[in-house]
Amino acid sequence: MNKKAITAQNISKKLGDRFILSEVSFSIKKGSLVALIGPNGAGKSTLVKILLGLDKKYEGSFSIDQNETIAYISQQESHDRFALPISVEEYLQVGVATQLRKRKIKKEDMIASLKHVELPSKILSQSFGTLSGGERQRVAIARALMIEPTILVLDEPLAAVDFGARDGLYKLIRHLQQDHSITTLLISHDVQSIIPISDEILCLNQTIHGGCHPLAFIAGKYESHQGVHHHC
Amino acid sequence: MELFTYTFVQYAFFGGTAMAILAGVLGPFVVQSKQSVASDMFAHVALAGIGGALVLGFAPWWGALPALLIVSSLMWWLQDSHSYSPDSLAMFFLSGGLALALAFVHVAKNTTFSFENYLFGSILTLTKTDIVAIYISAVIVIALVWYFWYQLIGATREPIHITPHNNTSKIVLLVYFWVLALVVWIGIKTIGGLLIGALLVIPVLTVCNWTSSFKTLVFGSVIVSLLSMILGLLVALFIDIPPSSLIVGMAILLFIFQTLVKKFVFTS
Image (cartoon, rainbow over all chains, first blue to last red; front, top):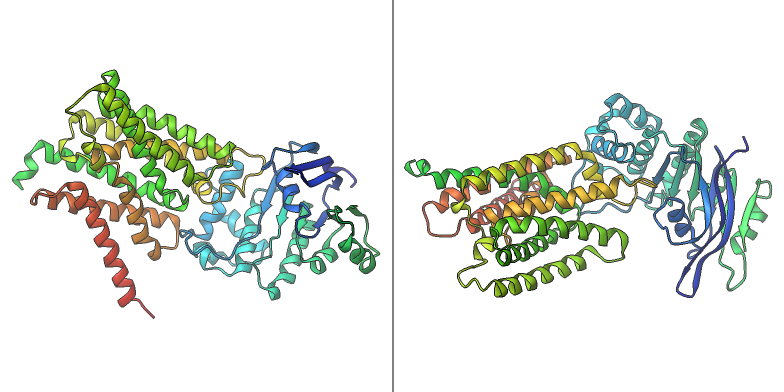
């Protein structure tokens, strides 16, 4: 399957005199999982915001078919102690209602989605805030799956999850992505964990000061990897 | 019981009940949007509308409504399209509204007018027309909240993250601001502009540690809000203290009561 789900051409973003992104071009094949890596300040989150339509001030262009359904999972911050209570069921309903404008989804669909992420149905009545970091991210993935996305963007999804739980969750993401043929863009600093599960790697690196340090590491360590796009 | 045969007492309870229910329903959305000061801001904007109505010769309370709807739309637009923080925008409109209100009253040259009724409420002077307007507005608010229930939760809880390339959250946020403006409009007539924020927020704080879902939180907030309103009004009929201060006082007492119960009865 070589059809492109996302194509970006010369995307640039400037803040004052500084280029956050400079003529970034890439394409992501339908159904593939692409890891987006790069050092802090390379523009990963900026690129993601542009792709999601949250930042409209940029140059260049990108294309995503209007029939694509995009789901976005961000880093679940350590539980906001000021957050008001919401049950897991309501959390799922909120995501679907906002994305699909449906008023309500059936309980059976919620249970099926929770099963995909290996969570029991009894969790529906629990308060979302009392779940562990790993459980909250599983619920967030279940919520994303409920809208039947064709594109999934995950921005540091496991940053707030214990180290011990991360490998299992990355494998789960890969497993679900392959099962449902979802084009996935995964942003993470967890290079060791995400590269083995990726089809391609997109590396952003600001070269104002030269150097391409993550690329050398990747090329050396994972030479067998298909397609390493880099912007140096 | 003879007191309840008086029309003004009946209207006070009718109007107060509607206000309490609306405050209980909308309060959780206000608190989780982290813009609790917005209700105060709208109250001050309402004063500008009241002042404008005085200048033009209209009934003051009705002048507040268009001002509220216009500013709520502006607030939404400025938050969405510019990089202004919600609290700084709230202060901008709050102080601007008050300044405009003072100017309008001076221009109207109405030496007998006082903002006090709208700052602290005049629940014991509600008329039949006021009650009809309050209940029509309440039905509109409840209908909108019910229809946009999950989308309102999403728009006030995490407006950015869950809707790429989808403007539903932004539109629903506008509906939220209009609904809040309408509730404040009712509030300035009943409990007063300076105290409506208390009725929106305190019941939520009283209940939030006892519930595990948003729906039960709203239900609990309505109960606490109604209790505060009814107890406050009952006491106000017998002692010479403004009803709105007693209503807020009851809400505060209920908050203190649940804090003590949680600390001394349910500590592990």
